[in-house]
Amino acid sequence: MLWLIGGTQESAVLARDLVAQGIDCVVTVTTAGARRLYPDTECCRVWVGKLTPEAVGEFLQTYSVRAILDASHPFAAAVSELAIATAADLHLPYLRFERSPVEGVAPREWVFPSVEALLATDLLINERVLLTIGYRYLPLFQPWQDRAILFARILPSQEALAGAIAAGFTPDRLIALRPPIAAPLEKALWQQWQISLVVAKASGSPGGEDIKRQVAADLGIKLVTLARPALAYPQVTSDRAIALDFCRRALAQ
Figure 1 (tube, rainbow, N blue to C red):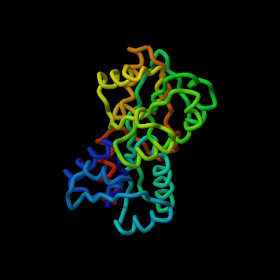
Figure 2 (tube, rainbow, N blue to C red):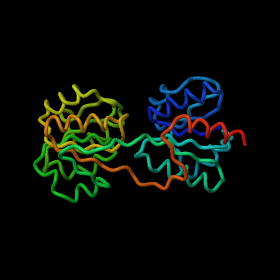
Figure 3 (cartoon, rainbow, N blue to C red):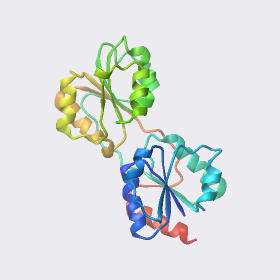
Figure 4 (cartoon, rainbow, N blue to C red):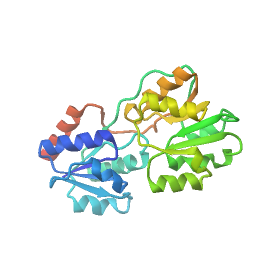
């Protein structure tokens, strides 16, 4: 069976491709809400939870995993690192399906390797900042609540809302929406909150990176982009046909 690391729009498309070709797979996602993205068939099973190094061995044995297709989010570095190490240890075929990066930059764009690197500067001081980087990063901004006016867009989940509030964000400075978000809505939100600076991830078009650059350029707003984690993937592709061919060949061995 194939282990498809999911949680993205691309992984859902790949899962449907696999089902159409009769390739058995088990998809891993971290939230119960993500389960609905995948086909509900006998040859496509969905496992919900967070795999740890201690649990991955039992998982592989339970599902008789023989190959790994990693279509996780570009910023889900921990699960990719676990999959790469597991594949190397057990000599399992591994392929990273990486969404294509968005080319170019906005007129007023800064790129940082991490949130910590951004917060080591004074770029956010006295700005009206919209954070579109996920709730897990928000605790890092808690000391900045009195140095800037911070807003955050999070996923519509209880976990994300609780995390944002714990990080000092009041309900009037939060909005829960699932990307991608159309440019008119993005622009209206920024204007409603009088945003002067946006912090986003280099998560590609499915995460709305191209739209944020467009709106930032249109409104003359500063844009801070967090670069993707640099991982040493053994094999990488952005081509679905290549990914499906990998799956067929890996399971035929």
